[in-house]
Image 1 (cartoon, rainbow, N blue to C red):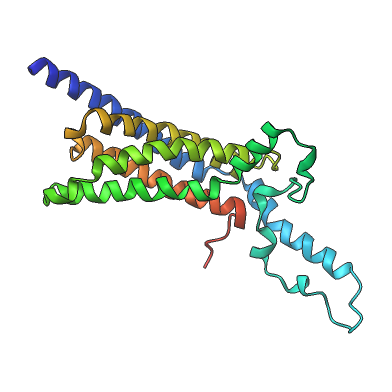
Image 2 (cartoon, rainbow, N blue to C red; image 1 turned 180 degrees about the horizontal axis):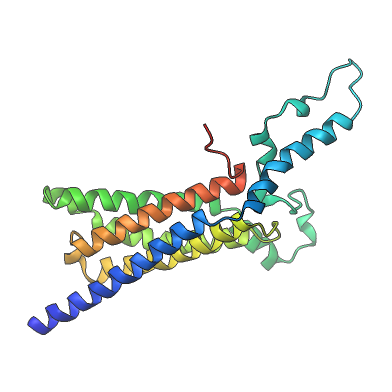
Amino acid sequence: MSARHANSAERRNWIVRLLSAFAFLSLALALAEPATAHEKHKKKPEQAQQVQRQQPASAGGQVPAAEHTGAGHGQAGEMMDGMDMGMDRSSMSFAERLLDWFGRLHPMIVHFPIAFFPAALFTAVVGRRQPAFSAPVQFLVVAGGIFAPIAAIAGWFAGLGADPEAILTYHRWLGVAIGLAGAGLGVWAWRRPWEDRGGGMILALTVMTVAIAVQGFLGAGVTHGIEHLMF
């Protein structure tokens, strides 16, 4: 029994180390975006407004409404830049259409791990004092571990053909890390349910929740521009 506890403690220590490194890498990627990418996002709406000013006024003498569009609207859809959303899919093979369709499921699938892992963290923490709250922890972690890699794969297909900007690259690879870590947490919760309220699981879920928050910021930056949270 003592050897079993020793092995369990050793595995838990390795998991804590890996998750700590994962958290550091996630924050480093989120904060290390080059200034060039920032300037590129900043200049795009200005360029769009200049193009609109060069267009002639409409018959009624009114300036096109697009000129009054805010910078945030000019940055929307960054991930889809370079992609022809109105392309004729009839010329695509069945496999190509299937992968394209699967990629467009990413905005829907991604909400599941976003909900499952923070909810698992909440129930695990509260469950230490109120055992009744800990009942769904295993289900939430396992469900998050199933949907996280699926969302990551769909995200890669969704971004095929998009401009290879730095923020999209960070968003992609952080998504891969979250998918792999989420799958690992799911296996852990499935095989060792008696540890779902332990310190190791709570630490792992805390790191996962922080990473998901950073990933959400990057995802919104891809579609709405990096300055989308400016007050």
